[in-house]
Image 1 (cartoon, helix red, strand yellow):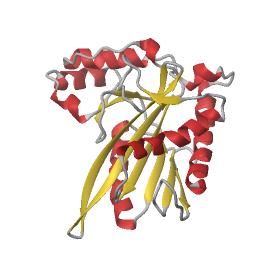
Image 2 (cartoon, one colour):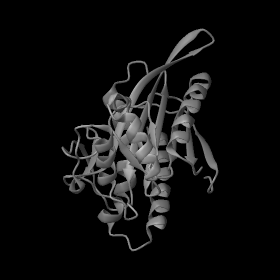
Image 3 (spheres, rainbow, N blue to C red):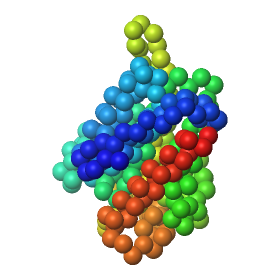
Image 4 (cartoon, rainbow, N blue to C red):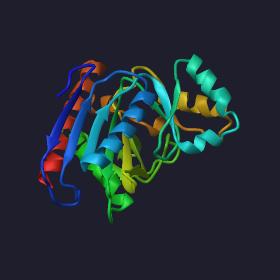
Length: 260
């Protein structure tokens, strides 16, 4: 797979089963940069996926920042919050998928799923497609997870991944369309964020700070979140742990696609 600053691409063969898609492209993206660049990359890959008839799975990480959903654009202090967060070293980007603010940084791994022409696929199936390989990767490291909600956690929803009563990953999705050669083509964009290591940053505090500036009513609690680092009690340095989790996730994604 790719080295730092590069992208590793691997095409996966024809499959059947719940994925209901024949061709997959796995992108292990080590390109550094802000979250906004990675979100733009999703949009470019979505158009390519529609044109080529290939579904995409992409692993990526970004520089420190905050990624918010479209609903946060309506907050009365939105413009003020943008400036204050940027000056604090937490630039804000807007994603297509739903939900509320999610921090990004070197201890956080993202999985993007782009699924062209979904047919009769359901949103529940998309969430399970995002979660299943991540659950398998974490299980290989001795961490058992289950889907569920955690009231008081950042970007809460029914399809978080939980360890006990704490959130270790969250998901979001959007159903979009692209016009290509006069025809309108639908696709699904799904996101999963996995909290691996915090690098001494209180992610909940950063999120609360944004909503305080923006005039939002949300307030989140730090004890609702956990990380891979806390759960596996790894003795390795945080950066080494992030690399190991990425490796396990790539392995699990390959198995998930080829086994179905």
